Image 1 (cartoon, rainbow, N blue to C red):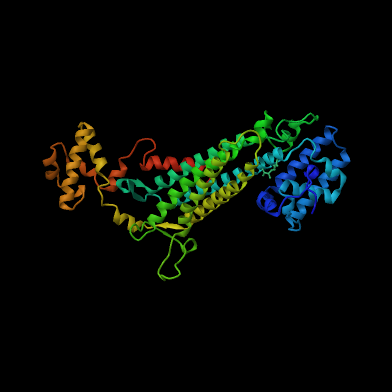
Image 2: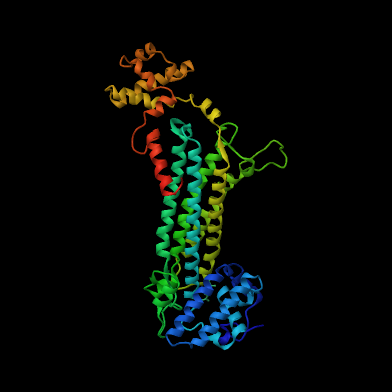
Length: 460
Ligand code: ARG
């Protein structure tokens, strides 16, 4: 058996069970690029500070480049007995270039190394998620552009409430996604500080330059406190919180579209490209991608909860528990990226069934609130008008008709103030024209929202 990099004080080697249990190479090899980038910056800094010769630095950098090439060519052998990505790469570098490699871990611990790698990884992950959020926003705006003027029932409690433009509903998702991206950007600003040089926990007596490595790696600045730098994983908690909120948004979209694709609603039809069938029922065409968007939100939330529980109650500084921080993060990022990509593809492959929606529109007294506003405009206090319209609706229910079917005499029997101009307020088409307030579903307001997003997302 190879002696461990930390093997000096040990007389016996670890059992196979312990080796298998404590390894992280099976998953943290995902950090290889960040680890190599960090090591190159660290070697350059050590040379500049006189802690390593320029020629050793060059040898190390060349060796690391070769290792990266081998990894990316699939030639590199990851070894469980070398525990994690940091020791795999360092030991392989020693195998490759010999003595100079032994200087690389000067003024460095795996504790600051892993925190640095992980921050770099999260930074890239955030950028990737944000670009996919933007793609989904674009897909939603384009879907809105294809469905100009289409009125759909708006629901509260899943009961018919008021008419809304479909565009208005689609743009609601675009707004939510914008805040999701904003949360990630806020998080990114806090992720982007450099732990490297914090060493195990206390810093070092060697003359390192933490500002140099921080700059070289594109961080804003080195972290001020070495104990904090190696201990805290709040940056991943933030990323996973942001992902969880995005996942909750997407799960609502998933639920809505699954519901709308049902025979009962029939408001939308996904194309075959985004549907799957049943192994037993030949007629089936299921909206599985959006069901899985809804379903995968569970694991994104679970990943956040795992990490919160992991970090809770840990004493300062580094604890090996923290090795368990990687898989939930990899899982969460993979899930959210897939959810965003598939939602965008679904949006590009779905059509709204105008006829079916129009046929469904008259039912449910969607214009009742507009009628109440009509009475308010005639000077009736809102509470009173609410009551009058409520009684009008009761009349409709007993007759199995809609508000616009009531005659002026019938309306006047409830209140004499109704005039024939009331019919300009009744019916879904009339009703929706009355919306005017900022942010409302009125067509001018929605057109304004669309202009805003087309400009912001550079859609022409
Ligand atoms: N593989 C560890 C992790 O992911 C880093 C190593 C720190 N280990 C240690 N014994 N100090 O957190």
